[in-house]
Image (cartoon, helix red, strand yellow):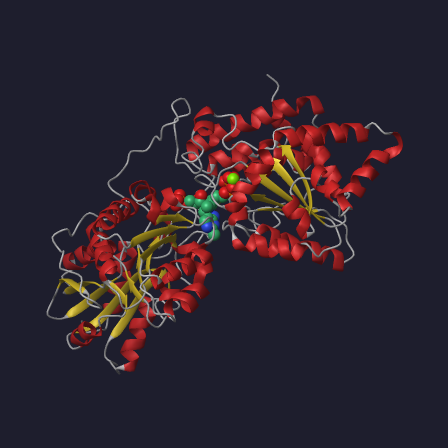
Length: 629
Ligand SMILES: Cc1ncc(C[n+]2csc(CCOP(=O)(O)OP(=O)(O)O)c2C)c(N)n1
Ligand SMILES: CC(=O)[C@@H](O)[C@H](O)COP(=O)(O)O
Ligand SMILES: [Mg+2]
């Protein structure tokens, strides 16, 4: 069989492909994606759904001159394939390998780095303005999914885009899915447009009749209709919500028909304003398991192509599973408990809660800012809201946390999953700033569990705490199962001393770093050092009483956290030592550097950034030289 994909080695090579071969190329791309992602893992379903859409965009646009912005960016694999990165797919999402998201440093064909949702229209609109101000004429397009269109920024951008008077293409890739089912009013509205078949038939026959008028008259009539203000327009044009805002709507278009897509793009390019092309695609297209269960195949680890099953063996319970089970328990005990997710019911583990207590579960869409303020309102109304949001996605709700939750001193519980290093999603998804952005907020309590049991106990504790907001940060993946014998009741602001030596080195560890600290202690023990190990439990407020006590006995303090250094736990402890004039104490801060941390296996990233037990041990030995511990 002829491999057309073999001849695609750099940007714009697709333009050499014969039109009759488009379908074959789409098949080859899908086969390539399934084969590679089955080995590396990655965002399978979204990429399978956008093969023809990406091909059509590459036939229509020129790279790198034209600017294409992918929302979230998890669907950009075909774009990578068509821009000379085919041979790097075996390294997808690994350390130093091909990123799973667009990256400007990876290719000049990637116009904008993404990873978080709903930014594409704003960024692309900025590029449109820059183009116009510089007197240039390249094309600019944003591709945004129906899920990403539930995010507030997308509406802010549409509102702004409605005023422009030059061409700006917004491609709405509507596959009726976010990671889970897409929810909310806009999803309903898009559904109505998609299913209004009577209207589509009428529109199609009208367009055909107009097209048959010679001399381009039909186009002119269609344009007139589009611009008319009377009710005739409502009969002919769908997407009136966009049209009424001042954004031209074209669609719905079959997103798997390249010719239809090309015709739509050509029409869109003639419009001298923002134009939204509504494209309908099937998430997971071409791989049956993914078509049948797009949610499961949204993001996958390596899997067996024949069975669709994952190939790696599950290693114990994850923190997410502990959270998920505890939420069901809490929901049963207390009917004031309500749960909020921003489009991540399965990722956060709240899908369990949603099945047990559907009336007390809220998926607000990809709307973290709204989700937090909505929780504040629920708390004012006497509910006990648990907001489950990944650490890096919660970054965008910083002001809502301050203005709506903290200043109002409301008892909102934040369950912050994916805190610390997450691995293969890389820079945009590492949860390495939350200690920094939460621990200094007045009225905010911040905790981190050492193991699964402690996460359970912290959630129960938080559900009874009524004085203000309380956040619990916990990492992606397997919950630490050791230290089960240490299960003293949670007491506000109190740490847990796991081993206490009369003097020497003290390891003050936060959350996931307790596991590392245990390993470091073993190495130090073997080296004959005296070591105290503290599970901090509370980052804010810190257990100052304990710190004062330890200051009297321990000369070397080592703080360990999976957060950047600036504004982190180590700096808080350093501030404590300075404030109380403990000049004889030497402190070593083990934290991540103040940098964006790239993708890769978490154990590799820990090693590269000095968070592994051997490096920590060596650093401690280094500072103990010359210090009487
Ligand atoms: C701010 C933010 N919140 C949550 C996510 C997690 N997330 C990644 S993709 C996705 C669904 C996006 O749906 P859609 O835009 O329709 O794309 P599709 O996966 O259907 O192709 C979500 C919720 C994110 N990337 N950014
Ligand atoms: C693209 C995106 O933001 C999500 O799909 C993310 O990759 C999910 O991460 P987890 O695998 O940690 O749930
Ligand atoms: Mg979608």
